[in-house]
Length: 150
Image (cartoon, rainbow, N blue to C red):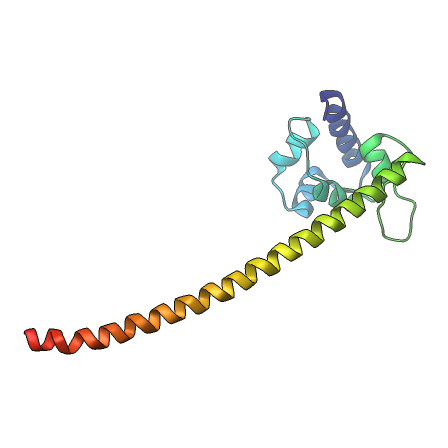
């Protein structure tokens, strides 16, 4: 993220807080972050993650397009309770759909890997149980020998 974009985001966060019905302290509490962290976002020293940005928009009823890109009205007009980011058509929508397909493929590959690792774990657990049983049998054989030696 360029310094200019980072600075603009900080300025929009500051303006949104000023226009909201909440104090900076209230918003920090609602976001479950320290006031110092919020101050760092406002001063553009740090960049909030996507989840925090979305939660901030929710608390202040902000339009995400305004918050992230400076486009549209500051406040959310939707009564749907959903926050969405408008996509510049037509390439933006296609790119997002392709990204969704890629994420689904990656998700499926990760599921397969997880199943494979789970199967390996079950096999290893079986081997461990067999080894523990063998160790127990050996100990049973050693115990009488040790008693005879003492």
